[in-house]
Image (cartoon, rainbow, N blue to C red; front, side):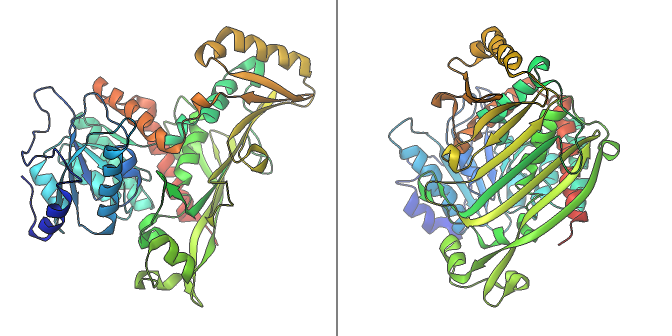
Length: 464
């Protein structure tokens, strides 16, 4: 049983309502049904709770939580509780919580579970990963797993040790499960439709991915309260090392699906740059709940305004293919809007474009644009053949809507539009399949190494 005297009052208040059905019996890492047992370590980011928005076959309902205590832990507990208490398809998680400054050491010593879930402050995340692998535990981590070049070396070592020990270390790449991205990748694999990816140039990359995020947003229907450290790049990481991880991952996932075995030789950073977003004291208070800026943000304060180093962009090549990735943060999205994504893959026959602007009602849509010199009627025929032969069977209801000569929109039924929060369960089910297999595919490991080499190298080379 896990106890801490500083946490007894909170447990006394929460247990009757929040943890109904929770017992004090400590379950083994693998129970008699051979289930996976989760340990959640310092859940400082809301993504930790989103992993538990659904239940999973083969995963024990009792979850062991180790954290220093405070607002971030309370937010995690409240969010999981809301999933347990919702009317439609409620979850049934039972939380055993330990709080104390020795939370990491306590978890590694007790090990009531066998799979560690990480989503929080990124400053020590790579250290946590390495410690868990050394202790013989599987790790399922929110991005980013590394934010500095030194972190990358530690992560590389952890991946090698995980392989030697037969452990799985995996990051949560939700954007691979967004339907427009899935279809963009599938269409790019059709020679008759896409014609293969061009090499591109610095001025016109073969692949461009742009993401705009917002500090103030709603998650699971409630305003998101961010921790103050989220605005400190030393703790959260620069934009290209944080959200940019998703975009760099997608570039490689679509352009070089076989993996990048030699990332030092195959990846070249051509330019890396960063810039800030300004937040007033009032805006900072609205999104954090704090009345003043904490002292660790002093270096970013100019005339009572927070200059958050929140934006990054890189131009680079991967196996000779030119790519551009950029991440921007604004305070709050316009009414009815949210985080947005833009992506283009340029092919020899057509371009595949994802837009999520006002014209799309801020919902991602995929377009196909015939290339220069390509007869639209020929491309139309190939789209119809692919729909009939394969795509329509895999995704019933998908259609190609002609907007004008040489331009089509992929009509996507709502049943395929799961949304960002639902993608966490999709990734988790994928990972649990790898757990059942007992190993990760080799390309997944290569992808993680190449991805974090790219992002941390971009941080190292960034200019203001």
